[in-house]
Length: 608
Ligand SMILES: *[C@@H]1O[C@H](CO)[C@@H](O)[C@H](O)[C@H]1NC(C)=O
Ligand SMILES: *[C@@H]1O[C@H](CO)[C@@H](O)[C@H](O)[C@H]1NC(C)=O
Ligand SMILES: *[C@@H]1O[C@H](CO)[C@@H](O)[C@H](O)[C@H]1NC(C)=O
Ligand SMILES: *[C@@H]1O[C@H](CO)[C@@H](O)[C@H](O)[C@H]1NC(C)=O
Image (cartoon, rainbow, N blue to C red; front, top):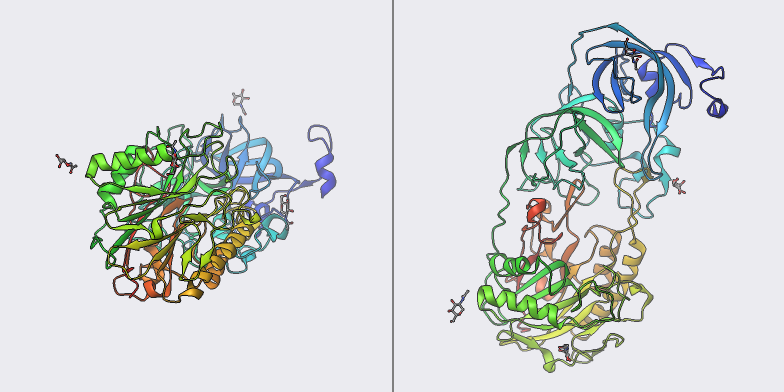
């Protein structure tokens, strides 16, 4: 039917398909079997109106749950003389629309004409999701994902070209597609993340879910990234969703139409989201306490998001370190910018940044931190242009010292593992010339001696390449494209091989690799890292419940991009404990200090 699209609507005799039903237009797949064709006498009940069209529901539904009984009639003028409750008959052209090649198509009725109101004042009832429909599937997104949305390579297939038959009880995207255009109600919605810049807000209703954290979010886990969630978009009545919603808030019931926009299945609510029960944003402080020696050392990890000496959020980061992390003995931080912040002027030192942070902490706590890092080569490590972000250590010198006094490496010096084991530079960067680190952060390794310890322990502070360039979990590409995953595999191999050398020298060595790995523990790069390095995921070793393993909120999922991986001697120690502190995931947009949550652990690093 390709030739029809080249004919001019106004003049040409388009092939007309007589009196089709909405179910026949939608078909039981993603792409309409009538795409591009003119249709006449499409009959439906007007269930909702928006600025650019109306939504109608079939008055002659079929009994196939895969075929949506609703349709968007796209036109800025068609709604002018129509009222919700009208049953209309309309002619038009079946159109598949998407604003971006990465998105799914939305089936619409375009160029509507011959609109006839057949009757008025008919009752309109929304379908209650999970009651009038089956509940949304909770695990799988698409039959095209091979069982795993993080399988590699992403983008092996496109939904739009494979056009699979919808299985709405098995696959989440099929479920939402099978309701395309429907007026639905979400009962007792829980807000599962902060609103985005457009105030769109992810929720789940009162249906059964998997991965629910104690605070109400849905946390992703191996092969389960929560297709049961839905984003609430711009209200149809012109009101605006709140900017202040927080993870865990309960909202009033939401009624709206299902669509696909900005790359996501979305409910456009009739009116703005309203919170009925607000969640707490107060993340409890760490309960881990240092013994101030090697028997119980506290180690924190925090991506402090583009921290410069003059950053407005610097005092708030300091407050988190003092009040919530409880001034751990050793802190691994990421995204410390140079002394001139994002000004791209060749400055790479971060003394002023780290001094400002240490001073702010001291002002709040009387705790004095020393710091250590390796300045990068300007503009070679990615991140905000000119910022020269790097990983750094803050440490309490009364509890631990850099082993051997600490002779730092330069930006180009590759730190070596020497017999002992000890490090050739302390701190030093791993293989800075490796192509694995092109436009990315080289890991910063350090060896430490804690008070009372027989042997040094080792830390690897990482910040791997971000997921930029990926596609969304709701996108056309299946499985979705996991941005820069190949880069992170390389980074896993280089970092892992270095750590393996330490453990070859001393299988009982205490080694902690922590930071922003920009990857989930159950996905390829992290598995490879664990295999090569010999380290284990501290979430596993410390028995953190799977739904509580999160340091970040993105789209519908709470998730862990930040991790600690530890050597067997630490993993098997009874002292070992671990806590994630959700100071940012639970906060409202206005109160977010960094995009990541910090974590704190307790370790015995005595080496005996
Ligand atoms: C709405 O009704 C008015 C009055 O009958 C008519 O002039 C106008 O063309 C109609 N608009 C549309 C979009 O049908
Ligand atoms: C999927 O669609 C994108 C965008 O149109 C295209 O670049 C890509 O090659 C397609 N992938 C496959 C596997 O066909
Ligand atoms: C920054 O710190 C390094 C090492 O601690 C030191 O050599 C350098 O002089 C300091 N630079 C400034 C500008 O304070
Ligand atoms: C820090 O120490 C000084 C001097 O001992 C004391 O006056 C001040 O109250 C302390 N501040 C805090 C926050 O503990």
